[in-house]
Image (cartoon, rainbow over all chains, first blue to last red; front, side, top):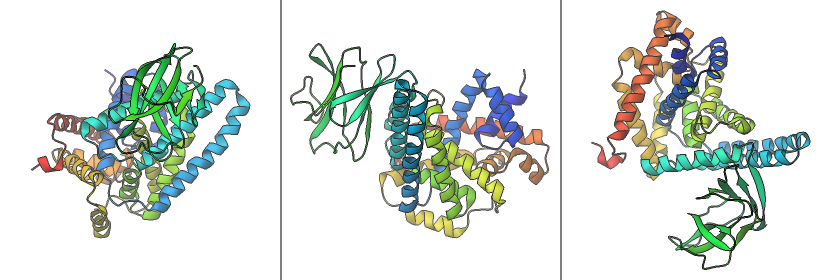
Length: 234
Length: 168
């Protein structure tokens, strides 16, 4: 068995390869499913090493610099991409912007949840990012509310909402997938300051409308209040 | 995430200004490569930390800064001060203790290879030279060490109990 280059997976995950070997390993990686799986798994271990290094709280100034960088980058990316491709580029740019927002959320994210919750949250985050960066995903405008709906080719969808305040005490936001005027529950979220990026439970089909209402905590089986957010038909 | 990224960069670079630069540049790389991100390959948090770590390592190698000496007392003291009594601080402390306990169970030469590489920013060939052992030995130690650390952390996670108050 060829162990040489596979063994480099550990060095690569630790960023310990010399530049030439790093390049050789990256070339190998694109052809080797086994190494990609091993690397994904080792990255979880190096992430634990990273978490173990955490110490002082960074200065608020650093946060500002990082966010300013994200905004500057967004301005650079958008016109450039739009010139090159048309409709598909808009979806891609929306995805990039949404990933930026996701990253901004991550900057501030609090990893103190219980382990299971953390795992579940990371799984959701991963699924959400998968939809947002899917080149086949399309963006649907909202007829009410500010933001957009991103739907991948399999009908998995993510709502990206701007300017929604956190839900009032005792209340929650509830999402709905509406087919032929019949709303089906599509998940709850609390809302927060800044951009909300929320994956929907269930799949969205052609002609469906996605809506959000404010309901009592725990959610309800059928909407009891008028929607505050509604998409155009998908 | 910002705090973890900064802690990681500071651990490697041992200088607040350099650490801030590494975090800022690492996040810039995140924005720039967002479209190439493969969620099936890694979680977003892993991806961000990987990019920040790579920037920190590149910087430490370029600057040839003093590396891999024990963290000086001042930095450790500040880390202690910063540990406010929040859930996040408690979780981070717990994770830190869990990983350090796992690291302690590794054979010394494997732990040394992992720590000098990941926290010290030493490449495999630099380590071979510094430790006076063949490059192949360093590669094997790193592979064996990271594999064993992964097992230890997995076992440890399966035993449950993430809460600091449940650990003795």
